[in-house]
Each structure stands twice: as C-alpha cells, then as structure tokens.
Image (tube, rainbow, N blue to C red; front, side, top):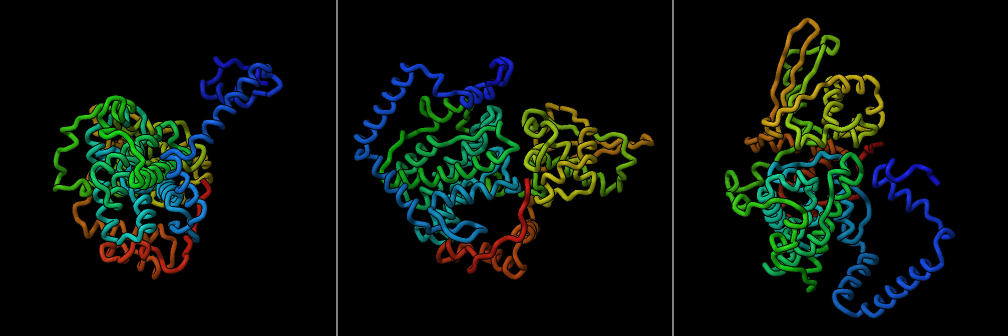
Length: 458
C-alpha cells in the first residue's frame, strides 16, 4: 500500500487511492454484514418498485434502446438508438473543439442542441423544416439563458453544457409539439442531468459532456412526453438551477432583444481548431506576420495581452497531447509562429505536441494580464532583435456580416472536414442549403455509407 499520507496528495488522488487500496480481508465482519444488509434492502425495495411510474416508462425506453437501432451515426456506418446517437454524435461534434461559439453563453450552443434534434427527428420522421424550427427555438433560448447568467456560471467553473442540456430539452419538446407545461417538465428533467466542469478541459471528458447534454435533452423531452414530471419554474425556484449551480441571474438581461432580432446573427464560426480563447491572439499574430513577414530567428520577444478570468482555461501547463494543446494559448501561438496550420484539426496531435522547437517557443511567450480588456480580444507585441517593436490587436468576437462570404467560409471548412470525395461533399452541402425542403430529416445523410478518410491520434 502507498505509504504517503492523504495530506501529502491531492484530495481526489487520496480518495482514489483509498478505493484502489481497499481489500475485503481488511474489512471487519460487522462492516461486511452491514453492507450485505444494505444491499439486500436495496434489492427488495427495487423489486417492489418496478411497477410504479416512472419505472415502467424508463424500462420501456431502456428495452427500446437495446433492441431498436434506428438512427444513423454521423460519419459512421450502422444505426443505434436515438439517445445513444445523440450521445455519440454530440461527443463527435465537439471532440475537435472546432464547432461554433456564441458570446452570450459564453461558449458553444449548436453542438448541445443539434445532435439531440437530429436523432429525435429521424426517430419520429420529422421534416427538415420542423427540425430547423426547433433548432432555432432552442438556440435562441440558450442564448437568452446565457445572457441572464452573464458569465457567472462560467466563473463558477461550469461548462456550457449545463445550459445546453436545458436548451436541448426545450428544442426537442418543440419538435415533439409539446405544450408549455410539458416543456417545463422537460427542462426540469434536463436540469436533473445537467453537468460538466472546466476542470476536465483538455481531456476527452469535455467533448463527452456535450454528448451527455444532447442525450440528456433528448431523454428529458421524451420522458416528459410520456408523463414523467419535474417541478415547474426549475430555473428560478428555490433550490432550483440558479441557486444550486451558484450563478447570478438577471431576468431582464435575458430578455433584452438580440441585435437584429436574433441571437443567431452573432454566432461565431471557428477558423482555428483550438479553444476559442486562443483565437484573438492567433488573429493578431496572423495580421502581424502578414504585415511584417516576420522571421522567427529575428524575434527577441513575443508578449500577449489578455484578460485573465476567462482566459485562465488556456493558461495551462505545457501540453502533453493534442487535446491539451488546444487549451494552451502559448503553444497555439507557437504553432502559428512555426507555420503549423492551426486551422487543420489533425495538426493537434501527439507528434506536434512533442516537438521540442514548439515547446521552446511556447515557453518564451510572455502573457500580460489586463483586467479591462474584452475577453474576446488580445494584443500581440513582437520585439525584434534589432529593437523594432510591432503590435497587432485581434478581436475574435465580431461576427461576419456578409452572409455570402460567411457561407463560402463555412462551406469550404465543411468540405475540408468531411473527408469525402468532392462530389459527395458538395452534394451533402446542398442538402443543408435545402434543409427546409427535406421531406424527412433522415434524408440529410448521404445515400451510402461514406466514411471520412482521416483520423487523429490525440
């Protein structure tokens, strides 16, 4: 057994170690009997409760999940149950950390809602228009919630998935044509499953939390449609979401009209396959490099000026793998300085992270904290060996107003990421363009099982 005392370890490590170290032979007889009685009691009350709602409802769902693979997995062959599709597709859509973001949350909106709607829509035979409508409803609601909390959940360390589960539930309720009371029930059931913390950033769990949020929203809406109840007003009621999750909520701020009438207009599409809080610095570097044609050997110092509260998630220890690299601002900047394409998610891998030259350059990046700076902005200052100083300012929070230009950018990004032959990739893009005219959302998928060509070793 490890001789180190609990005080000499982190709390989590000490608790985990105590679990691993336990041996039954070290447990006194009295404790064994007490444990056996507890298990007996649980088994008995479980047998007695199987006929009481909502258990039969959940049993039906679980059995259907095991026997009814009827929803496609995006980019994969075969089908699974709706809730498992939401889980897998949600996780897959966030694992590259390349999906769109919105500063109202702040964080990701689409990825929490879309996987749930696609899975549910396929299951019930919904049209493209119905899914699109439900998505918009859920998207706007999640942004309103985010504005109400004004970043307080983020400051508490909660991932955006806490709101994402609620938004997914509301969107799925809309797709099921549920009334206001049923929608509140779905939201309450989503709150029961909501979670995700910043402490897991830089690991697989960050993307898994998104899948779990999508799955939670889908399940919540389906459960509500079958009559499983929660408490109404779950967001604001005593010991409800606000109080329990520790946020501060301003109902008036949540209902401030969006610029142009829709929060969707301020949605932001990533151009780098890393945490959004690295983007402003990367933008500033790109501008400097384009303007000055900088040579790495001529650079004496690089300084990045940012705010600290939200950027704390990208001011991490030197990364050991691709997932951690996405959440390390100095390393992302070092990649760009060495000409490594940060718009290619497949460059964020173990091989790149292990490069000694990148690690050395990242270690030389100086971070200056400015509490008054907008969290979506950054200033990069480069000092050359001859004393010349150049500066550039990046603001990643400005949405593209030209919808044609935005469409071209997003579609080109999609073509690169599909990993499909060009003809099939363009055909898939056309399906999204004509989403409102699709008779059934399942028609969105390619006619054949077309697998992406590339994979990545994180």
